[in-house]
Image 1: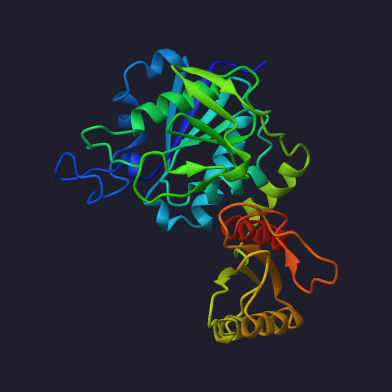
Image 2: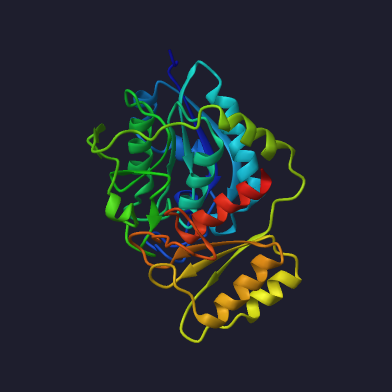
Length: 314
């Protein structure tokens, strides 16, 4: 039986951002406020959470997220998840790469307890900041009966790590799971499920965490985009530079400009792992018999990159 502690791991982001002018929602500096101060500023949070523990893992603008921060975050999550007194984990994060961090954690954690990423589109100094409500909602999800898996919470919606994506650069309601839809809604502190909680990784997680803890160098995987007039020049340069994996954001159902495709086939023949995703915001690549390049099994380009990195680690 899980205990009543909720651990909040801070990584920075807009939710911790400040601006010299109150009400400036775009000219702010991210990652200025420590996670402990963020929590103190939200009325009712402590009462909702029971015992609330804050820990600063990083303090960055999430556009600068990298493998070393992911490693630190994953190891701290794994540590707290094994504590029987911990009921769930909340992570404060920037919006720009939230979907990538969520998918990474989903791939490496045995999240039989909820790991909830939350964020804000407006800085802490905004006239109407969205961070405090998102924090309250994230804690509501972390304490919801039966909650499991790596989840994201923003604007009253709960999304699973596999499908969530940021789809708007400014508005508060910036996240969606596309045609899959939200897992749940948070309404006045109550969680209303529309789908099942995502399953945990079970035995695979310990192997993944051990690999991450001991890795010296992350596999290098880059993303290229197919578009009108695309060439294979960038692929050839990347191969010469030692890239280990390539994800191509394809047009439509995995189609690629012929010049770019020829370069990708050459790269694959040279030992580079190549995966096709689609640049379309909805749906996924449907594989066909005889495909020369593998498909991403429904993952977006950025998530396919993470999956390929982890595959190369294994």
